[in-house]
Every structure is written in C-alpha cells, then in structure tokens.
Image (tube, rainbow, N blue to C red; front, side, top):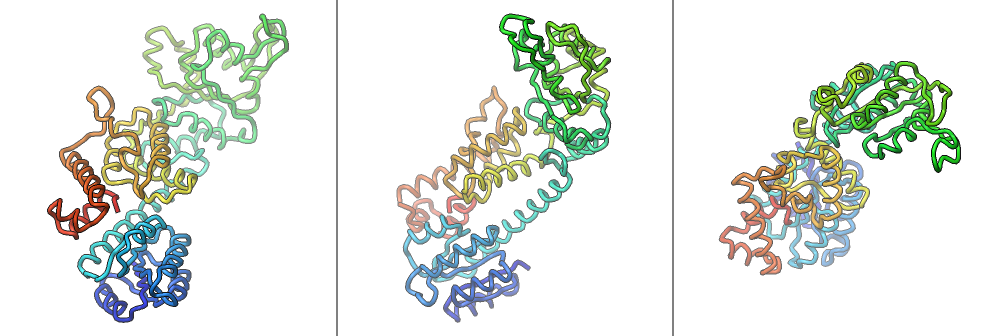
Length: 452
C-alpha cells in the first residue's frame, strides 16, 4: 500500500479522510507542522495531503509552506497535495512553484480527491520503476564510460567490451554519428591494463588532408615551412596507451598505407625523418561509413580493414534500441534539471510519445542536446514538445514525430485550454463553463497536459 500522510489541524477532517482512504492507502496523520515534519523525517510518505493553515497560525499560511519546503527538500519524489479552504490563487501558484504536486480547495469532494491521489500514486509507481530500471542499467554499465542501455543489442556491446578489453587486439567500431563510438573506445581503454596510460583521440575527418599526416605521425624540424621544432604526433603520444582513430574511412590512400605499416611493424617515421620509432599503442578505429562499400569502390584498403577489424563492434542506432530512448531521456532530464537547479518532474504525455516515435537521426547525441535545451526552455513542471524543439519536426521531407489523430486532438485541446486560461485569468469555473465540461473533468484534462 502507498504510504499517505494527512496533515490537517481539523480532527474531523483527518478522521473522515482516514475513513475514506484507509482501505486503499496506509494512512498516517499529523495535526501541526512540527508533528508532520517529525513523522515525515522518520518515514517519508509517498503522498502527503497538506493543509496550509496550521497551528500556531491556523489563519495564515507560513506553517503550511514551512512544512511543504521541508518535505520537498528531503523527499523530492513525494507528491504533496496542498488541501486548503483558502481561495487565494497566489497561494496555489506559490505552492506549485515550491514543489507541490497539486492543489485542492475545500470543501472536499472525496471522489474528486481520490482521483488526484490515485494519479499521484500511479506517477509514484512509474517513477519508482524508472529509478529501478536506471539503477539496474547503471550497475551493468560499471566501467562502461557512462553508457546506459538495457536493450539486448547494447547489453551485447557491453559484454563484448568486457571480453576484449584485457587484450591488445585492434578494434573497429561501426555505427551512425552520435551512437557513442568514442564512449565505447574509452570503455575498452578504461577496462584494459593500459587504463592508467594515455587515451588519445583524433578525428581523421576533421583535420585537413595536408595537415593530417603531421598530426598523426609528427614531424622533424625543417620538414616543411613553419616546422621550427621537432614535434610528436598523436601516435607517439599514445605510446603504452590507446589511440582512437575516429572516422578512419576519411584517411587518404597514402595515409592508409602508412597506418597499415604501423599496425604491422609497430614503428613510425615522422614527416621529414628517416628514423624508425617504435610505438606500443593499442589501436581502436571507428567509422560511420559503409566500410565494405568503400572497399568495393577502391576508397579503403581491404588489408587495412582486416588489420583494424580483428574485433568489430556494431552500435545500434537509437531508433532501434526500444525503451532505451525513454530511459536515456529521463537520465538526461534528471542530470540537467539538477545542474540548472530546476524542479522539473518529467515529460508531458505528448512529449514522451514524440520522444518514442521520433527517428533521432543524430542518435544519443541529438537526444541529449534536445533534453538539455528543454530543461533550459521549460517554465513548467513537465517538458513539452515545444521545449524539446520537436514541434516542427513532422514535415514530410525530414525525420518526423509520428502525429496520430489522437495526438493532434491532444495538441488542439491543450491550445484551447491555454487560450481559455489566459482569457479568464485561470478562473476554473469560467473555463469549465466556456469549454462545456465539469470542473472535475477540466481538472483532469489540465493535469494530463501539465497545466496544473
């Protein structure tokens, strides 16, 4: 049973609520802020019904807000439902901004209140399941350079990393841009006997062709104009450590020959030099290109491919990782909410549905960027599609959020609610009259859209 703490100075109300809710929840009661804080500190409740007017100042709200602040600070997952007889709208808004889950005005309609509590309990269960899933994934990602993934494909990647890390065989990582190829390389390095040595990464596609050879192999003084001193390249810097060559397919044919020679003989020559320099470095390469097509098109040496790909790891795109996308989105949301000190509870229903259906051409990197943007842009407790920057992604010529008829209806419904709120300055009675729904139904709809 979900633990429910009722905080109210009125004994009759406490008794009635316990009678009405006791069969569905494990009910505890407190009559003032001090008693409530003591009970909550000893055993945090999943749900709290909190009256703002508490002794010694039952006509004010300070005691209630003191209690709310303490509870939201020490139990951030607790859903505090503020229940009060006061009609001041500013107190409701202040309570929500202070972290309350919801606001309910007396007199109490038990049926209506039960709906609100039931939703809070359901959300608690979902959040608990998500925390368990993230915890289980975190345990499995130990030593995985911060990667998260519970789908079979990613668990297979993690298992391969564990098996090959202790050896020195070259590894080729294949995957779309943004899937985490460098993280896989770092995980291999961190789990290897070389983990205390240097991890050197170089993007072969980001450096002009004329400079790449010197960047990789270094150069001797006077090798060319501007070479005023002997300089080591990335390969030498990786001695006794790991060299990660990202976008390996971008290497020119002459550089492919030099890389092949290094892999075969473990020696290099700097540009302008004649001396062989021994380098002991593990090589991990990565590409988002179709390497076999590059070989067929004579753009990549087949012998170099076989040298690099003793072990090949294929990373799945995010769109093929199932529920991982939701787990990752929640992970990034928690991370950036904490960084920005924002009390964001989660994603709105339509935003979460869009996250699931969007094709994510930029993969995990794009997802992280979108969630980080959403945290900065959101002014609500729940992140919306607009916050994510995905509202305009349904064009026919781009990866899209699949917009069903139900979703289109939801978006129109939310827009009408926002406009009605603005016209009537948040007056629930006038809004329900205009839209032709009961106050209970209106409350339910607004909650679903994250507008309360």
